[in-house]
Amino acid sequence: MKIAIFAGSTRTGSINGKLVNALHPLLVEAGFEVTVLSLSDYEMPLYDGDWEEANGAPETAKALAAVLSQQDAVYVVSPEYNGSLPPLLKNTIDWMTRIGTMDQYHNPIWLIASCTPGPMAGIMVMRQIQYILTRIGTQVLQFQLGVGNAATAFDENGRLARDFEKDLADKVIMNLKKRLKS
Image (tube, helix red, strand yellow):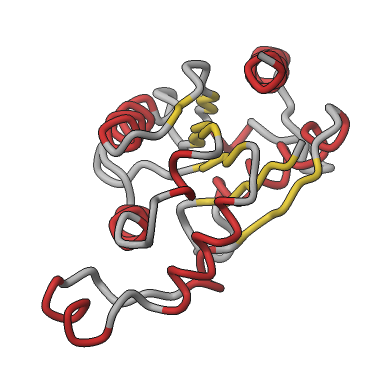
């Protein structure tokens, strides 16, 4: 089983990057072949139909689409910006809808997680990402992982520190495995 995981933020020290790093060993332990991606490796201009008409889709968008279409699952871990998704993630999603048959959305099952400094654990951004992905025909796993109060969410080794989030992360992974086997 192959899964790609990435944060919707490329900021140094991103708490969602920390969550990606905490989920990575859990996915490996569950038997997944994990590819950790960084959106900074796939820079794309702000989506503009005129730019696309003149230049076509960016090669970086095509490269990312090729990687994602080969996965059984894709795990997007996103910060919440003012109650919404970050522009980097939205722009990536928009460009990816311009690539070929959209296998990058239709083949893998998508998972959503968020980590926030406050107690709400990214509930608003996870809803919005689920809505957008569902709208474009993506299979989205209904179980999501929200991690709030990020300052105390990780232990000294970078793993999830609290039992609630550990159990929820395991539940998400277990449900993904079940879904992939059906």
